[in-house]
Amino acid sequence: MRIGILAVGKLKAGPEKELAARYFDRFAKAGPAIGLELGRLVELPESRASAADGRKREEAALLEKAAPEGAVLVALDERGKAWNSQELSTYIGNIRDQGQRDLVFVIGGADGLDPDLRQRAGLILNLGRLTWPHQLVRILIAEQLYRSVTILSGHPYHRA
Image 1 (cartoon, helix red, strand yellow):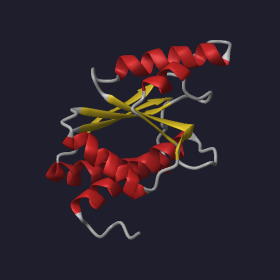
Image 2 (tube, rainbow, N blue to C red):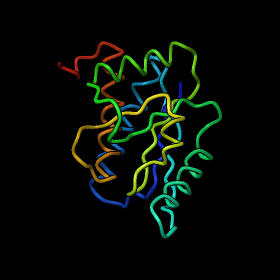
Image 3 (cartoon, rainbow, N blue to C red):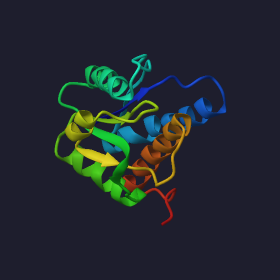
Image 4 (cartoon, helix red, strand yellow):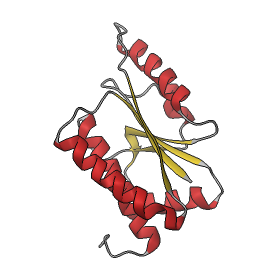
């Protein structure tokens, strides 16, 4: 199963981009042994609409267009489920085992995700009650994807 990331906004060169790339690289190397591969990492431009609702709608349209057809969406949103790493890895493993071809994590813009896009998601996940800058969200999700691979493969990286 391919796992991709769709994000509104661009990650500029620097330590954040390097750290996210390091975890994505680890995931890409370890994942194929258990049927997981790194899919597309897509950065989309932020909307220039004057109102937040319009920006969210425009960004949602870009995110949906960028998602592979039939992909399961995981919307990263503060109103989502607060799972631990084991729960996330179980979810990923279950989706993979159901024969799903694509799973895509969606990171919205500064205003968040459009309600219709959240509604379409197979899972709405939050990364804690704190507000995180988008650069750190990419690092967090990259690390959690690598951690999920290690949990699913029985590697000792994850120590609960």
